[in-house]
Amino acid sequence: MQNATFENTGVKIFTPATTAGLIVFFVFALQCLSTVAISKKETGGWKIPLLQVVTFTLLAYVSAFITVNGLRYFGVE
Image 1 (cartoon, helix red, strand yellow):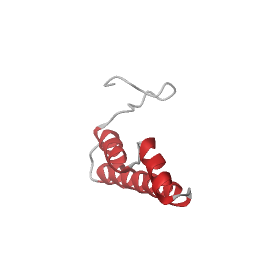
Image 2 (image 1 turned 30 degrees about the horizontal axis):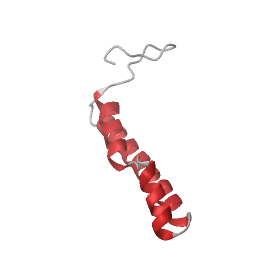
Image 3 (image 1 turned 45 degrees about the vertical axis):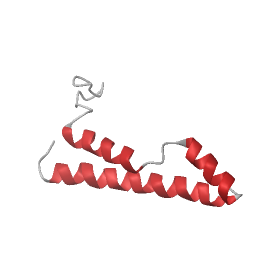
Image 4 (image 1 turned 120 degrees about the vertical axis):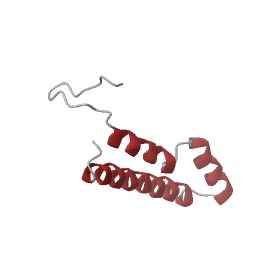
């Protein structure tokens, strides 16, 4: 992973900023589908489970975006 680069540009994929963003994404993302299944069973419908998936995915993406760009702003590449 230390040598992984984009083929057409040669830019490294995993920098400290992108790695931190990936970690932040996995902290907030709803990764367990069994959690969605249990939410559906307990609530009796798909409204809450789908809301959870959308909300946590957006939260994870926005948090990762802020982390990566914030670190890049402060010079951590």
